[in-house]
Length: 72
Image (cartoon, rainbow, N blue to C red; front, top):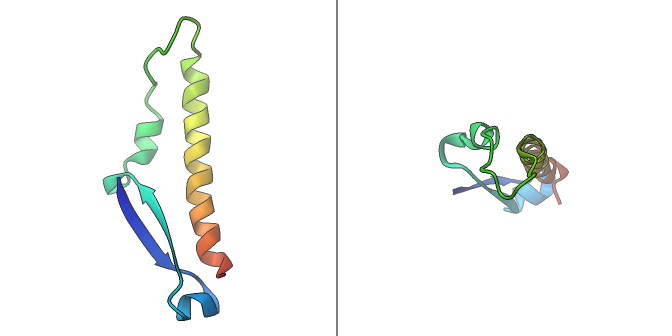
């Protein structure tokens, strides 16, 4: 994991306010979440877990962008 930061939009960014996010080095998070997770227990739905991880990553990335654009 590596830390990325960006200045916020507008006055907040001009004042030096930033927002940060931890992401996979070389941005391989997308391919990582698409791998089937190991079987955690009998009856574990690996496909549902994969879908949940994909959605969580999408929300995480969108949240970072929204925080940058929102300014402060």
